Image (cartoon, rainbow, N blue to C red; front, side):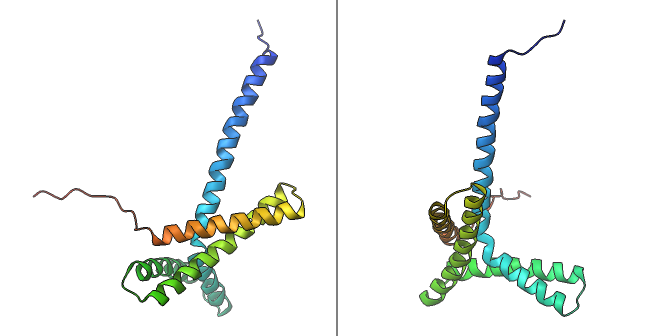
Length: 156
């Protein structure tokens, strides 16, 4: 005997799928804007990678050097902002990281506006808001202390 799903079963399924899809879309948007805070280190790594490629280095050298430079830029920026550097140096580093993140957020907002089929004014408004939000997220992340896992002391 074949069971045919009724209209209420299909509506329930579609409602559940819409809710789960909205949650997934919001999570992907959050991930997109949280990743934009790494725009400065990633940009430095990509610039070095292109420079090394133009000089004729191999892919392993390019990838390894770019990874080291990206991590070093992020670590150095966090260290200088959190350390005892003079205020103008701290502000300069913060503005470089925030500027790169805001630009990346602006581009992401523009892409979302295009994908959403928004009018020109709404698209530019979304891009500006996305840039500001991403810049603020980068600012707060750069100024917050690094989170690390607490390890229990070894008992011998």
